Length: 314
Image 1 (cartoon, helix red, strand yellow):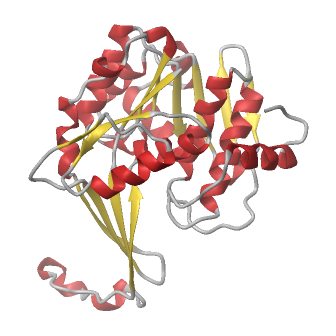
Image 2 (cartoon, one colour; image 1 turned 45 degrees about the horizontal axis):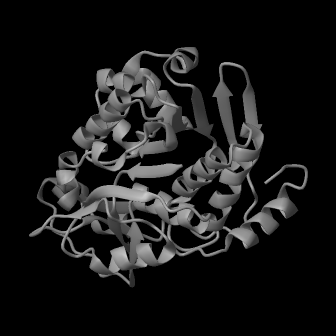
Image 3 (cartoon, helix red, strand yellow; image 1 turned 180 degrees about the vertical axis):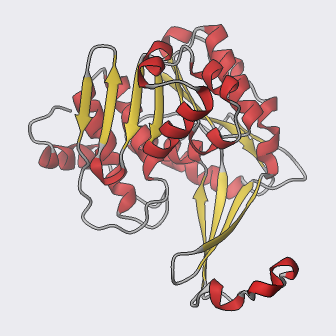
């Protein structure tokens, strides 16, 4: 099966401020803010939803095609993804701009001041799924958070081509209109949300859980440390988490979960097993710092999977 991953490709710049932001804001001067924070650390991480999914899927011995817009600073990142096993032919470089970037400064209380630079991502709507799908019956497209116009375009292309697709609007639900969300969800193989995203999706579209199964074959809701639930018109499958050895950083956990789901689909496994593969893939990211700093072989993954879920197959 050829997997095409449409979505964001970005750099994350994570900073740490040793004090509290609130100590440096004057309530009577909030209309004239001019303040600078000297940070203790700066970490540059490789990120972006589609790239994160691609990386974990490559660790699971698949070779997904990454479809997205990048800037002139992407060369090293491209090389690292290709070394991991990702096909970056669909990561199109746009000159005179930089790859999308997320800048976050976090204080000791967990408060965060952040900015997102769209960069090359604004050109993702110029890309097309059609170019990369030769056999719709042997393909799977994932439409993950990206430029809103690109998300709509790529979803409608899947519908037109008859390509099975996973619709994963995630944090872009805020930007997308209810009509567009409903239109893009209609015909999806899988709709996936976390709890909050599900409620926001329902509010913006006016749909309930039963309505969603009228649009998509399967609806998956992730529940954090409570696992996940998979709904079809025939069953409800409750999937437990795979407990991590330690909790380091949750960034990218959902993307690794999606990679595990895709691996289960490729293997043709039942939802009980597929959901547990997703949980196991997510645990690896929780244990590391950043969404693409975990490493394992397929054999190591299977060994750990069997030790955690001894009654399930892989």
